[in-house]
Image (cartoon, rainbow, N blue to C red; front, side, top):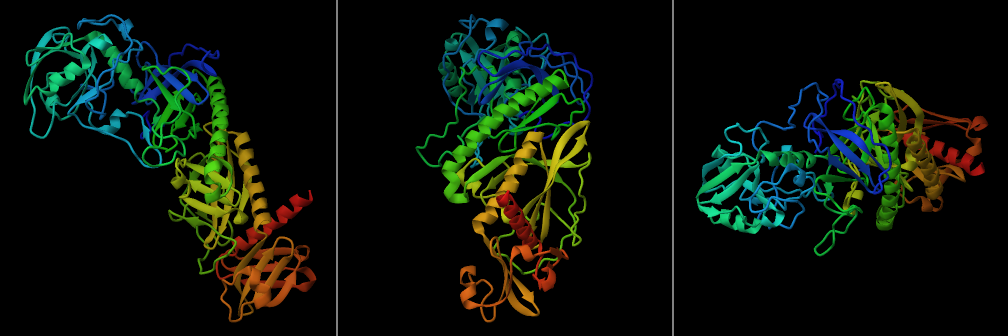
Length: 632
């Protein structure tokens, strides 16, 4: 993971210029040199935009930029820490596979040029810590060293150790194994190399081993010409006391350093979008169209969140952020200047927009019977705030549907006066990424991109579009000199109006969301046509019915329960009055429970809705707006 948990917010120091490479790649849509942030340091990378992936390759020098963004100087050799190895839990006991590379047979040292792009076969973990990642709906794995707590960081070794044979005795405890991972073997044209040392285990406690050590013998058994499998078997049968003859090969440390750094860039999907769950079902996500390289990370773009100044504030506007669909992992990329960053952002935005449309079509094929047809999906940023005063609660409920929440109050409740505690956005606001879906009848909010059918059925918040209104679309606020598009969505519920201040990344995005919300509210009232609300009128329990074509009706409930279906209202209840929509001259409410309808010469009617009257008001407004739109 690239700085997903502690993203710096300090202005960057001066940077050396990045050599530019702007031309489209033969294998991709765009290719160029940028920088990415790993553990507080910036590393030069070659970035290639493909149809569904962003390929990131570490610069051959494998050296960090001169200065990190938070002002910390970085060691010139590009090391990442103060101890042994970069790496964490992994699979165990795997056999080596033939890998690319040149020279270095019979245990001889491969030169640094031959190591570029070499996979070296798999890492085999010898009784070390194990790790896995299965979070149910969406499985991601970014091989994050910082998160597993098992691997040790790479370091420089003393001069008297380098290229000298050493003997190290390791004594295994009853509960722990050897605690190393190895790479290489004769079939990979590499010696048997220690690639990871796990913190606190036997090899670490011996204090004599380093990542980059070639294992020459195990308890006297030669490994100089061993295959990967032979080395694994020799180490596993070595017993409780293990005597190793090793030799540190300084020339291979750039390879391990490069592998350690690139493994922390981006993430990997382990399950395809909306794949069925169950045994025997193929779950692998799509693979890159180009032949994968061991020294390259392929960041999938499907439902990835592209943002600027969200978690990493960049006053120079040179950076943009990629956040994984589950919202856990992040990758920050920095261009040479703001103009180049904008070109990259637009290219990514276009590619990801196409990918999102494919995901929308795929989701509709699988989800229409479950949640209705999806009209618009994507990422937005929600302003986090201190909340406001709420209108009175109450026991009222509308069959037209107000909001439901799985996590308490998520939006900002407005006061009885109708104003929220803050109805503008300022630079001190913090923004939280959310995934939003507009269906044919609902406005749905998710904490992250729903990856399975089950996740789509469990939104964080859901509101009826008939009681949702768009407000303040096109509000522009300045964030570090960069214009950001902010708009407001107001959701009428029985407990008050929930206000969401949302930020899109582009004006086109904002226009698309505004169109989806307005058209969605029109379609929702046209589809349902009739909405009923219980209320009190002149002290009697009544039912108010709003019909998009026929207007307003009030029925005396009498001895009938207020939940009587509206289709049977006329036959079972006494109608007190009826007015067409064109008779309505105005409406008002106190934000708490009272609703006032002005029918001109027929006078003003006062209704006690027994809860917040805003759902009725929003339904009336959406009906009127839809009628005007239908005429136009």
